[in-house]
Image (tube, rainbow, N blue to C red; front, side, top):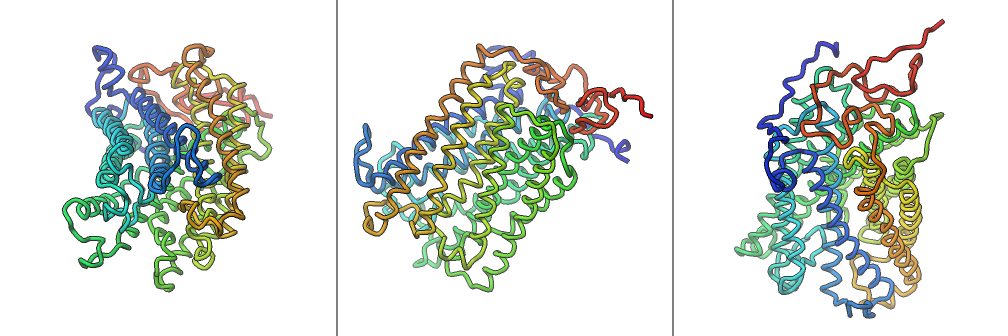
Length: 574
């Protein structure tokens, strides 16, 4: 049946022969080559992560030693602290996780994995990355306007965000809203490209059930984003109108409702968690079989689970609003849906564990990060069950328990999964091998100090410690929790310093790393059948796919791997 399925076409729309592009700017700055654009997304994400990491450092310093000057930076004022909290969340979720996991990995890998020359719409692809770059500049500029950056929280709840005087300045939140609107526009363009490329530009023989799981999860994440972002864009326009024009969408005195923003924000905000988590899972699912030398367990079950998770992600948003005065009769179904959505992810985690079972496991750096991500994510998943119950959430809501849970959910998948992907595909992206020794040091420091930061914060949350609070106010109540914040802060500083081996490894290996072979990991997927780095146009000729992506250690094979384009000889059987 699969052999009868046909692909619509294998030529990208508006395809440009990149080898004919003239000049440095056309080839490497305003390029339409998906691989160059992927590197640009990666650069934006990594640079913004430095800004986001520095805001985390300042936040932790204030929490450990509240009201005291920060060396070299002076006293952190209350408005500045709230701005740091706002910008940290905004940067890490929207300007680090999305550019790296969706923009960089999606752009680089989807055409290569499905056998296409480029993205479906190369010029639209170029426009998307430069809109993201403009959005990043606007967000950074908001730090320097009169009144400072946005300080209404990364969720931007009215009335804090709707009344300029509440947040210390007029332009801070305005620029924050404009930056988010541009960033969402960028990824709307990217999502259209991802979906069209994966559906229409697959090589002959690349049926849906032969696509790598990474492509499936990227496509699902793009679909979730396209379906959920509209209400938030509308809500942001209304919020900007409230601030600039004087409308009253969120002003009760003018017939508006502040809770409207919460519904609009979380209708997108919770699916957004899966928009950035699914690509991280996709990276892990690609790496696990390679370093276990086993087929992925439950390929189709994982695909179906991903689709179900995407559908359910659109139906759980109000579990963020259990303390907003919601009718309990409405809270109950959202609580049930929240528990249900854990089932597809539990299936994916069990499939990963089953893939490891009795595998011939090797512990290279990408695999170490995958194992660290998998073990840490389990803590995030289990603690999410507490917050999914409206009765437990009434106590734990807006406490540091939520902060710890959120980081245990996203940091393992987004950052550890992202690091795993960078180390795994680094040879293909740059044509060089990163240092294995520095990679192992980076993993050890990241894994140990991440856990030392956030395990104490679960205890702070259980003890009633509220998040987003500038601690000099109400300090007597919070003083018994201070030692836990001190431990978490020292660990956070060491976690940030633990990224130095990665920075050195990443930059130095581009020029001095050992030259990479075409397929250093003996992996099966199509990107490993082209030179490292891939040439313009990716493939000399359109590949023909003859097998699935995870045929490792199959009975009768002469070798323990076989590329998707390769017919293999079988050992004689008795």
